Image (cartoon, rainbow, N blue to C red; front, side, top):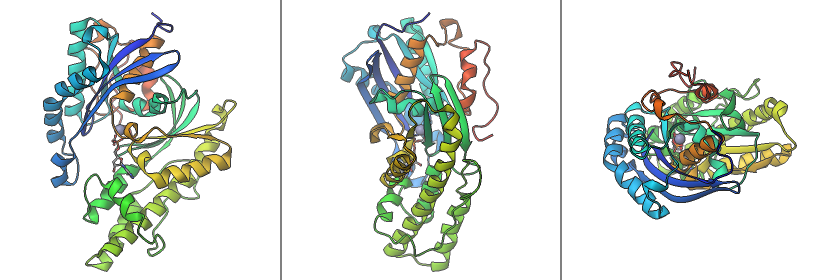
Length: 370
Ligand code: KG4
Ligand code: ZN
């Protein structure tokens, strides 16, 4: 059934990592309106471990999700009877957490007799720029988060081609590991960016992995190890040492991103419409230096540049609700019969997403980095 004309109101749930999030989005032909949007962070629970602990995250989702849903719906001024569908992240992510949101979504959808739409978390990030602007397809997406780092040609709803991805660490992961080895707080990305602003990026000679090579894959493991070696060579680190290491790391990482982006634009050329568009999404898109670098690259290549507002760069449920609403309006839903057939998945590559449009789809067994 195609629902293209009528506006749709969708409750979105996101629990795949360490944010417990619920949002209500209304989508009509003019675009998306975020009516309610609640994100409960868990950073203080994970901070002692300097990383996300899956079991702690899953428990926190169980404790927080009902309240987040109630708050998002109160903000939106809608009741369950106003929902046309429920969208929940069905993967990829920490499986315990994914299951909390997915099962909660199923329960609400079943109780209300509306479709439950299982959303690929990466699709949420991929569509997030459309929360604020009527961004047309196709566009070239750099998705850079704690778990993912890839270039995707976003051709339409459910139509994604991965052009390249990391062969080891994700960019956010590299920021987080760098922060951890320098004894900074968690999450590490914002801390590294803050210190980098006060540091000398030229003091340490750090590698730029894969720069100058073909394609648009990434590698950050060697860079992180080089930062570790430089820190070890110094022994005791003072504030300036830390700032210089952060500045050196960030400058090297951004040079890698710039080189890879130039190649990705070349690979994207066959998909270009009248206007090339470059979009950055995912938690690392909060990094101002990265945004500036990409904006400059886009201008140089004649591309338009878009980045979602900061609150929708990091994990949130508005992007999941939007992806659900877009799928619902396009007629792509899990049917009521499929409620309990659609699995939660720890791994789920975005470019196999076309499979969800076929009723026979199975859970992916291949890793996102496979
Ligand atoms: O998208 P996201 O909230 O969660 C995942 O799906 O991974 O991304 C979180 C990641 C973390 O690695 C965090 O350190 C990074 O985004 N991040 C940043 C900044 N803000 C968040 N990295 C660099 N600079 C920032 N300002
Ligand atoms: Zn994410």
